[in-house]
Image 1 (cartoon, rainbow, N blue to C red):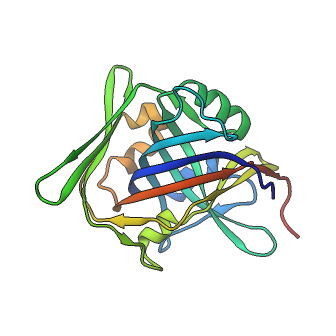
Image 2 (cartoon, rainbow, N blue to C red; image 1 turned 90 degrees about the vertical axis):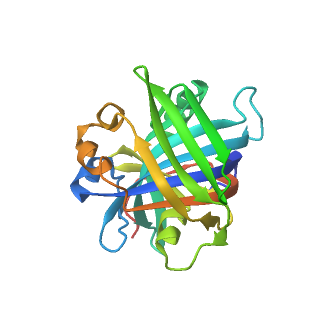
Image 3 (cartoon, one colour; image 1 turned 120 degrees about the horizontal axis):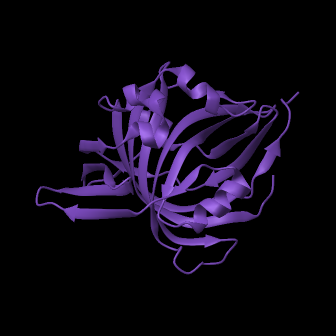
Length: 244
């Protein structure tokens, strides 16, 4: 495994709305040699909004690309490397406000970044909760992902649904039917807080395809919020065959 850190940053204020989907909807996105990682027999996708802060690529802070929003749609897989099962995430779509990020990430990591106007707000309430809202503009419309979050944070409980969603430390990208890109994501275990009044208002068909409309138009199965931490993403390596 390459030891070089490709990206270092803080990931902060991570809001995740989780939806059950039919497994066959995810099959076209499934990287070679991986399989769906199910929660209680269910295939889940997560709508994720968070902040990139203090971002460095190969140790360099690029002007105008240090602090910014990201919203992504992801699902969960696992990969057996011949010694152990690795639990990871696959990104269907990633939205950021900076055009240079899709240019770099899509070419180097075969990611699926798109650049759109974005904004976010954090509004403290008088009831011990805070409103977090992430927005991105597509075809003249502001799409929204938000929730009310309690101001009290606790460690993730082992075996919990929060652990399943947050504790994935690998990324996998589909290159072709014979090749998968694998990269390590390193961070400490996060603290989480209760979520209420979750909002997801978006043009799902335009963003992700009609196959996701039915599933993402329902109420989320769960909603989670993590405080976040420093994160490091290692340089990726290619998997070109099933381990023996």
